[in-house]
Image (cartoon, rainbow over all chains, first blue to last red; front, side):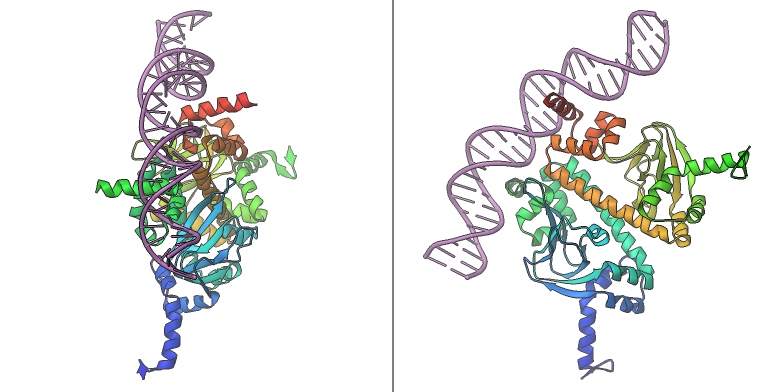
Length: 212
Length: 212
DNA sequence: CGCGGGTTTGATGATGCTCAAGCCCGGTGG
DNA sequence: CCACCGGGCTTGAGCATCATCAAACCCGCG
């Protein structure tokens, strides 16, 4: 059995390798235009890793050796403040990057915990590999710069939202911006992300559904 | 009259040009090591600009054509939310960068206003000039990446602080991290930056000074 | 079936906002 | 030089929002 003159066995291998990078390819393509050959050259810099639900990619105090691109699954990064409360800094679903860049580049221990919320498939890349990859495929510089810029913008907006909105408005904003996250993540984590208690979020949800 | 074999007239010109870049030189040197020659090659990409108190570098709706490095003075960037309240996103004193990177790179109108709080001296650089400068002096890539990373970290910490701390704790944190800003900026702007009303900040300050 | 984590519901209280008035002080014009 | 103005800071009273603590409920899973 053959596809396009490729034996079925080889086809499957190629297919798997492509499938493994499917989301990453989509992410890069949505921001810059990259040839298939360039993309193939980028692949070897990455390392596949699977994480089961509740496993950690990084724990507070460890030094982050990689950043991760999420091909499949869901993760969260969070810190624990002086009072012992968790604060979720970021969620990452398919197509998102997650990691502690600061720890990665400075070598200082991270203040974040990164945990899989579902069984996940990641593509890891180390600081050194990023350097080499950018050296070899300079176009990707732009991709990463755009990513950084977008996350700065998102973070600034979230900050302003956290300063100016009521809890109900924050939740409605979240529904609008990240409906997919709301679907897949336990409610108390949404509350933590938004900076309110689970009780408050529960009451808000009741409020909203009655209102409709 | 001569210094080091340079005529006094020429000396003054050189001196002025160096003084103009004093803070920038310090900022770059604190993060990467750059030769004096490299630095001299960087200078022409910048444009000096003075702003009097209350003048604007950028207004909401405009497209940001430059980012600015503050050689002298103080600025703030802020947005106005749907309810008409100002929220200060950033202060910038000597040695800080300020601008709307997102608008700069995307060409979309900015959502920020950037205003001088004191008479200020800035070094402006355009998106195109940054590209060219980085092309010509690749070492500077690292400088800008470090800047971006540091601002991401600062922003994430500020977000967690805004979610987890009481108003009093936020103010004390501000005193600790940015004592210089507290000194130079009107109180109601500090309140805006911290996400509280001027009344609340006033009461907190009273509280603290009595406590001591 | 029963355990346990997550969510809901209720009662109470604290934190911080709103609105309103007074105060302080630097700048301006008579 | 003084009176007046105005912006910013302070002070007060009342109130809304949201956190806390506690208990009940729901549901998936061992």
